[in-house]
Image 1 (cartoon, rainbow, N blue to C red):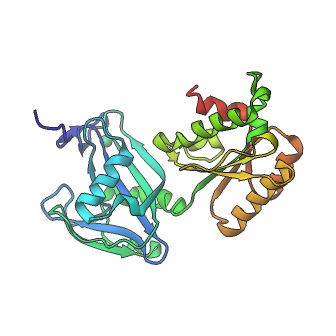
Image 2 (tube, rainbow, N blue to C red):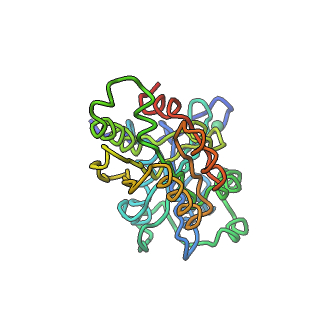
Image 3 (cartoon, protein in one colour):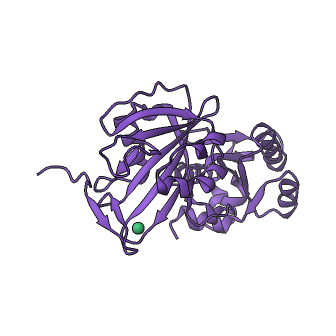
Length: 290
Ligand SMILES: [Zn+2]
């Protein structure tokens, strides 16, 4: 038995012909110094000679994020550990879909044409993308993709307020409750979150948030793990949360910053700093898969 690599054409419900039996995905990689990485497709592939993204068909059981990073490695020699996926946008044609995975370089990457589906790779400043002969579907998607290029969803979680919102005995073990919350937040990195569940507009968008968990009092022993930065409040949690929001807004004003708390005074303080606000119940529904 060979692997199900998903190679093949699909006729979608709208009558289009698309590549990828399980759908397809591409990587939109940005290097703030150089622009976005585009690929000119070999003449013999579907829509050959046009400019688009490294990408291709999903293999059976593969997520779009996995497929996009795998294809970028196969076609452009991009090492997955050098890029951080931030968000994705899906065009859904019922029996076929295409997901564009937006990612930012963590360190400069040395791309090179690595297989025969790619004819040329080029870093293109965002302003100049529209001047190239683009693949039809990429040309249609580009304006909306550009809006979110290089932006992150930053989730700032008021641990005491979130764990306190449920009467499950958390007060007997505040540190344990905060650790369980941290574990669930870390797990968001697998599938990401729908932007619309976190006050970020756009039905088609999924985000892999940068999570900051602010702990105080008896939960101060909780430490950072992969994908969750834990901030230990020196005095009160509210001031620490406002400070985290201010720093995030000052260093990267383009990001979407969302604070999770039910505290009314804190809500108005962080809104004044330009953050959006979400209630603990809404976060817990996402974390518990409800
Ligand atoms: Zn279609």
